[in-house]
Amino acid sequence: MASRLASSLEIPDEADFDLFAAMSALADPVRRAIVHYIAQDPGTACSTSDFGVSKSALTRHWRVLREAGIIRQEVDGNRHRNWLRRDELDRRFPGLVDLVLREHEAAIASGGSSSEAHAV
Image (cartoon, rainbow, N blue to C red; front, side):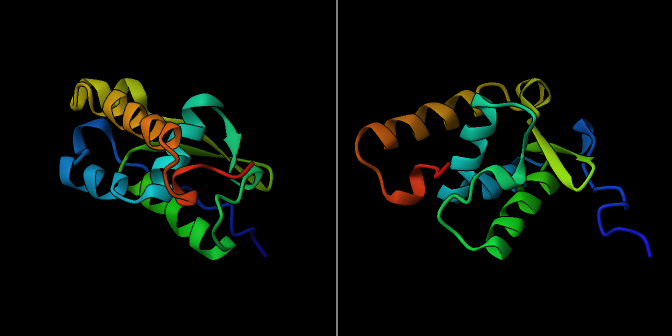
């Protein structure tokens, strides 16, 4: 029986990025926390933090970010390693990633909700 991680992950090409899909993915505070976390620690595994949500909810958040083209995931044994597709996003939507990261950090600094910060 093949591992559930044996199948390739759907990751859109840069040319297929959709601004509205990216904005929708980034509208959620948990997903913004994930993006911030990956920006700080590229290549991190999905299982290194829970972000204050259930495992099933977290799996969905990772999938939404991947399918929107925000992150790239690679299978490494029984884990998924994650990278922010910053260069590609900057070429396609200049300034978007910087804005999201800056606003996320501002929300944390001003005592934003617990979903604005990530739990490690």
